[in-house]
Image (cartoon, rainbow, N blue to C red):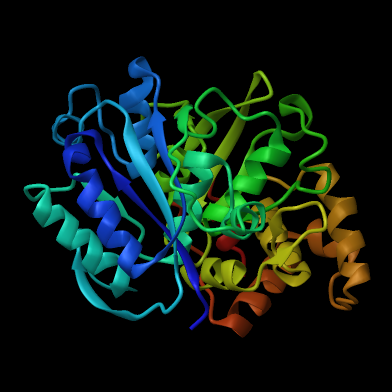
Length: 357
């Protein structure tokens, strides 16, 4: 298998065992860098919450268990990765057993519990490395080609995004390296141009909305548990996001999965639906999630249909409810998709259109 980058964290309460842990790591992996990291004391619980995607308020059990002072971060290269099933906090998963078993050993050495953190997969390493140090694995290896020099620089820095994102380009670069997502619509001018007044919120389709909310340092706008509307600090302003997720009824779950699996990477640096999914999901949104189709959708959808040579889509399709329903029925039936009621009760659901025959 291809060599993999991984990282270990030795939290403050495990620091007395740092020397034997490092000695053991050196026998198993190529150590690339080691850091001692200080988070701002008043923001420690916020950093910890975002890192673990859990609500961990000040003096939480996990914080007291791990410690809230400086910790060590060790980045390693596993030259011979091996994978197998292991019991994790999320059930039995297939993980890098070299890293996982070492983590389990170091947890025993430090009295049990979770005073040692390590990444189970390359995807988890990419997420943690981005948040902690602002690197994706490939860039990190490019910038640090040599093995560890024995030094342990001290870094006084919080997780990336703690004090807001510089701009949407930086935000999407982190999303690209850390999670699976698609910008559903209105992405034509992103990430260079954005205005809440002109473009409204940014609709993302994701697999884990809780993780994405913590990742982006988003704050809920509304208290209702079904609302997925978040405010994210970007460039000194609040950018509004909706975090739709697979299985939320916003669209048929199989359609949501297909959009995720068949997404395309835009030259502007973000993931979008492929042209066919974009056209039909946009039409579905305009017809099902709105009481009527807004004028700006007419021109956009007509242009897209012409480019894709969808011959049975005519100007009358969007103005005649029966034709519109028939057109949507034909597409959904061809893919075995269903009309679905969103779990988010704030989303309009056009039942009157569905009653058309």
